[in-house]
Image (cartoon, rainbow, N blue to C red):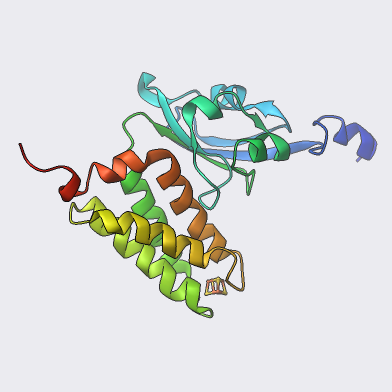
Length: 201
Ligand code: SF4
């Protein structure tokens, strides 16, 4: 307050002035809240949180809270933590809740947990969210259980696309974006759990 708005803005970068609180959780040695200048490279933020735990490699990051698209490690390690930087890599700064996942993470299990959350949180006012979030959860769950079909992958995307942009509040989009991005980047992990694609030797 003493130094004024311009001083604060100049701590950050163009279009993303000042500082931001990032809440780093997941597979890091020192999870916590970090107030850093906007535009800080993700690599530096990860170091502040002690790096990926147990000496493991980074697999993926959800940089803005569970509702924003997931980003593979190689892209995330080159990204900067500001509005433009995360938009350029197809994700968003969201609430600044950074979820770090190490190389052992099963992305199908992560998506099952996320879809369960949005299904539980849907207030039920609008049909695409009320019905669609249940469909998303049930389909991901059966894929994870090893009883999914190849058609389930198309149905998942179809349901997510029908929710996105067709609901009263942002929870609908928030439920759809993880599904779309997990399938975009980690479709092979979903396919690996579908019996028809993996017949026994
Ligand atoms: S999108 Fe929002 S308003 Fe609509 S059912 Fe979901 S939580 Fe309720």
